[in-house]
Length: 248
Image 1 (cartoon, rainbow, N blue to C red):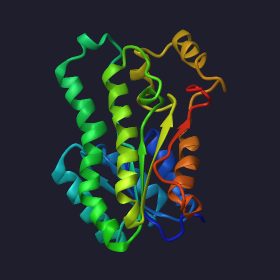
Image 2: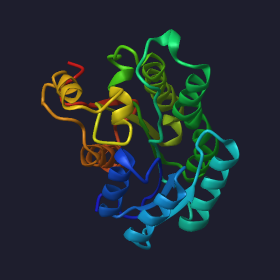
Image 3: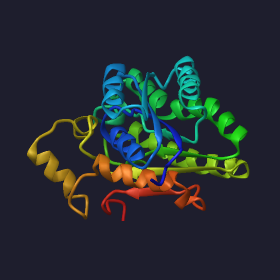
Image 4: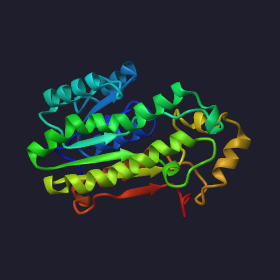
C-alpha cells in the first residue's frame, strides 16, 4: 500500500494510460479523482472501483473546469497530494505545413495549457500542506520525435522542459515534479499516431522498440506509482522513459 492515505487527481483517467494509473493508485491505497472529458466513462469507472474513487467531467483546457475539479477533489477527499497530468491529444500524422490551425490549437491547449491550469489551482494547495507530487505524462516523441507528428512532438518536449522547470521552483516547498515518457501503447490514441491501424503499420512501429512491444496501461501505472510514492522522495525533475528502449 505504497500510496496509503494519498489523495490524487488523474486527468484523462477514464481510459488508456490514465486508467492504468488510476487502477494502480487505487490498488496501492490512494483515493483518486478520475477527471475526464468523457464524464460517463469516468463515472462508470468510479462506480466500478467504489468509494475510493470519484469522477468529475473536465475539459482540462478550460480554466473554470480545472478550478471546479480542484474544488470538487478537496470537497471529496480533504486535500490533494498527487496531481497526474495525463490528458492528451494528438493530430493525424501528416507534413507539418498541412496540419490545420484548429488541430494545432487543440494539441497545445490540451497537452500544454492544461499543465499551466492544474498548476495554477493545485500548486497553492500543495504549498499549503508543505508537500506534493506532480507527474506529467509526456512521450518519447518529446525526446526522439517521429516524422509527421511535429506539433504533438513539440508539445511533449515542452512538457519535459516544464517538468524540470517546475521541479526546481517547487522543490523548496516540498513538491516533487517528474514526467513519464511512454512509447506508443494500446490506448485510444494509437490509431491517431499511426494514421491507420493495420498489421503492417503496427509491425513498422514495433520494429523501432527494442523490447518488441507497445507500452501498456499497467506499465504506466507501475512507473507512476513509484514516482508519486514516498519511495521516490529524493527524485524530482526526472523525465523517465518507459519505452522499451526506443530512445536509446
